Amino acid sequence: MLELYNTPHSTCSQKVRICMAEKGLEWTDHLLDLGKKDQLDPDYLKLNPNGVVPTLVHDGVVIIDSSAICEYIDEVFPDPPLVPAHPAERARMRAWMRYMEEVPTAAVRVPSFNMAFLPRFDGLDDDQFQQSESGPRPLRKHFFEKMGREGFANDEVSASLEQLRQTCERMQEALGAEGPWLMGERYTLADIIIAPLIDRMADLGYAELWSDLPAVVDWYDRMQARPAFKKAFYQKTRVSEFLELTPLQATS
Image (cartoon, rainbow, N blue to C red; front, side):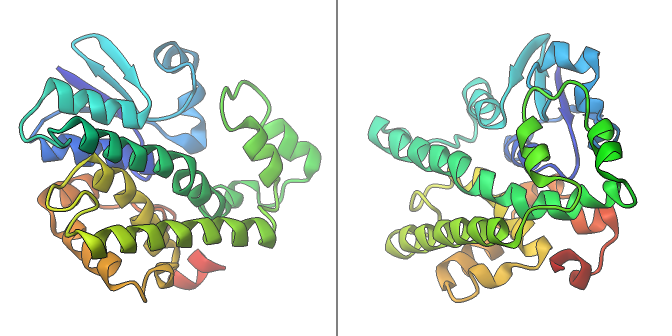
């Protein structure tokens, strides 16, 4: 039995759902409301002491960290394979994965949190904001404190967009040299892990970050056409849909 504790609009949840859908797996969803801090509930923290989503429970075995979950799924359910057969190619794929976790995954949080979390703080003063964010937060505590109730500063947003542009340029180089996927002919976890981040930026109105990179444009079109992608991105899984924002609001 597969149980997935996740949130529809969480990019980390989305990549696990894509991975599971690519394998043709069925699972039981346990949906957590981040706005209500379900991820910080004591019972959930017993499963995932980091207090983040997603968490996979497979026949009672708990797996945390979205990329680790994806690798676990591929090992336990090997067909179709989502990693290269050759050790050197697997290492190259994992280098992509580590880069994605360190650079674009962190960078995308800045505009995402500005968009998704700030509406919760409308009308609060500093003391009320501190009170609303008090309590246990194993990860992201300092991230929220840095964001504050008015959001990240423009220079921090600019820095995050610069990192995301760098990601797109690296993708363009790899796709242009090999393609049609990041690892050449083979579709792998590297494509799955970056896909929700690219989709998030498109949803936030930042598709111009790769509009002049034709290989990335084509890759994103191919990614969206995959049945697994469509299964993972069901209705209201994007932040703009979840918050019912217009494109103008999404980028303001």
